[in-house]
Structures are given as structure tokens and as C-alpha cells.
Amino acid sequence: MNSDTELAPAVQSILEAARERSGGEGVVAVDARSLPDALADAEADGRVPVIAEVKPTSPTAEGTRDDDPVELAQAMVDGGAAAISVLTEPTHFGGSAEALTRIREAVDVPVLRKDFVLDEAGMDVVEADLLLLIARFVDDLEALVAAARERGFQPLVEVHDRDELETALEAGAEIIGVNNRDLARLEVDLETFESVAPEAPDDVTLIAESGVSSPADVRRMRTAGADALLVGSAIMDHGADDSDVTENTRRLTRAESGDDTNDDDNTQT
Image (tube, rainbow, N blue to C red; front, side, top):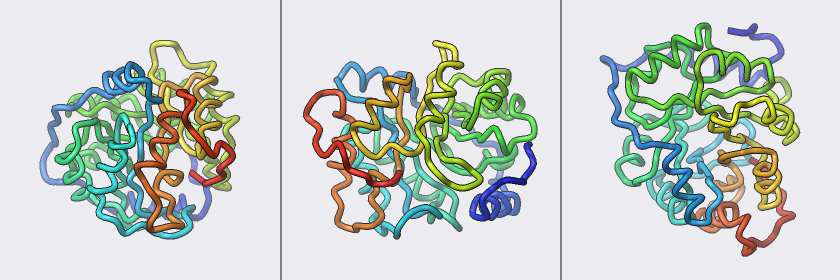
């Protein structure tokens, strides 16, 4: 694990909370829905593969969405989402394992568990199709990738730069997310993905995370090599409780079809 230095206070707080949380009872076993298949289905249907995120709030969000998480997930699928990401971190993001379970029962697309998982015990909390592993915060990434697969999870390894990408590849990661958000200042820069993506092998499923807020952003990330995009706040729109989550999702999933509007929207992700 990299040093905790150069982390924003909010990230440091989330990390410390993750260290204090216990795992579940027993080892989780999952019969996972395939993310690569779901992304291919979206492409075949003319949709941009979007992993839409149910995120009640976050340290960078302007407000909280109190909608039922199942209704939010269903609205995202109605908007064309290829998969759903669910925050299960309770303290800083308002998430829960129970919400993920309910969502996975209600939708037929793959569901990612988004959390700070630091060890094997942290995996054994809830069944999900994918499990996020953040390269920067894991001591033995190769061992955790293997442990996730043994349970049936598809590990999504998150990186922030080329060095972390190399670490992820050496650990055997096949699904890699490049996070455009800097962990020191929490600033977003889409050039992060553009700088890292060319170093990824063609057989890796590459996901652009954070910073995508408009159809123009979608096209930019796709041009840079994104097989899919993980989008949270631009879909949740935490500043407006009555925002149409289905339409927010659709305008991104249809960004390459020519029927999107409001390309200059600056909603934050």
C-alpha cells in the first residue's frame, strides 16, 4: 500500500473508516453476471456502455439524494445503463450492503460493489457481480485479485496513473478503471485517462471513472479508448431531488447516436 501522505482529508477519513469496519460472517460465493458481456450487449444495441452509480451522497457532492436506491437503479437501467455501481460505504457516501442486495435482486444487469476493500475479510460482506479494488490502498493486489475471483467476483482494479496501471497488470487485472479524480486535491482532469489509456493492453476492459458530465465528455473518453464509463454525480444530480435519473442516464448512453442534447452541461461527476 502506498503511503497515506498526499491524500485529501476526506479520502484519509474514508480510508480510516474502512480499516475499522469488520467483514461479514463466512466467505461469500458469487455466481456473477458478466460485465464484458453486458458491455458488448450495450454496444450491439447502439448504446455507450455506462456503469451508472447509485451514490446517495459523497464528500464532493452538492447535497444528498434520498430516493429509494432500487428505484434509482431501475431508472438508470431504463436509461440504458449497461451495469450499476452501488456505494456500500455508509459514513461518507450513505451506502449500505442491504441497498446493494435489493438492487441486485431488482435489476438484470451486473452490479458493482463500490467501497474501500482493503483485505479478504472486507470482501465477505455482500454478493455482487464486481468488486472494486483500489490499487493504491492494497498491500498485496495480486493476492486480493485472486481471492476475489475465487469467490466469483469480477475484480475491477482502480488506478490513477501509469505506475498503478503497471501494478494492476502485474496483478493480473482484466478490468481496470482509471479514476480522473486526484486523491490529493479531489480535482478532476479527463487528461488523466487520456495519459494512462494508451499504456493498457487491448485485451483489458478499460473504464473511465469520474469527470464525465456531458455527451461531449463521453465522446472524448471513448475516443481515448474507454470501453465503458463509470458515472455517478452527473446521473444522480445531487443538487436536485426531482432530477430525471432516466433521462440523465439516457443522454450519456446515447452520446454517440446523435440524439443527445445539452453537450455543454457542466454537471459534476
